[in-house]
Image 1: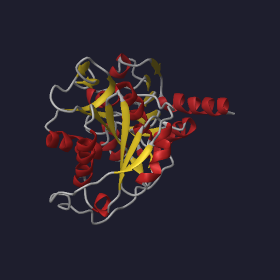
Image 2: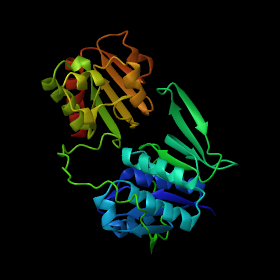
Image 3: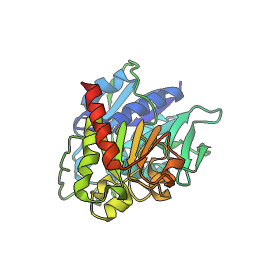
Image 4: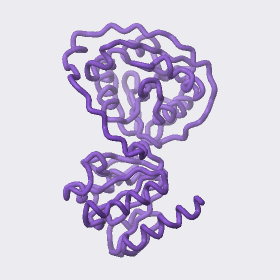
Length: 320
């Protein structure tokens, strides 16, 4: 059976959920071969093997931490040359998409970004994308070279499928560009204790209707009761009510959670482009004519300051 390279997103050996989702998709196409780079790479093998990786190629070198993406591209290219895979699957994070694009250029292949599904086809993997601000769904395939496909988080379930997970050292030769841009310092992001926005199964977002930074406490309370991430519309971010890192939309982050709750958000196309692929969408807005109601699964016409606290209380009651 053909082998499928899966680029591993991990932090010091702790594998992030989107990678496990990629292994589910990779098993539809062939035998997953995971590529883990940097500090703790070898520690990923057990989890990767439990989720279907037949082999885990690992490499650690100072270049992966001290420089930007080029060393990782060098390593992924080395893995590609060693394995000759039928496809390369990469998480759709900002860094990983740059790695995917650079790899595709190097190996003379096409790249598909932000897929929401991948399936086997007669002429190679077929990727499903949501395009033109989520107005259309398309199916695409790469017609030349090894397909390089980035996949959005929450596009596939995490499924246990024990495999060998054999650890193999990957030999990497860094090119002259690898040390061109050095990381001079890092500032850890202050943790909120909430899930990462792009990976969260539930997202609760607030918009212009929240009417002030202090009122986002209402949104945060609902999110915390659900174990959800907090998002914000561009209007709320532009007003200075919430950080840009939490912006959902065409100029912010794209999310695809199992549940998306939009509170006080009108539903402009800019926002819809970043959340329309959510599996279930709930909107709370006092304007019955708001565009957001055109795409929701459930809509509540009412003042969010009445509805959201009641919803929060009900969630807490049911959780006991």
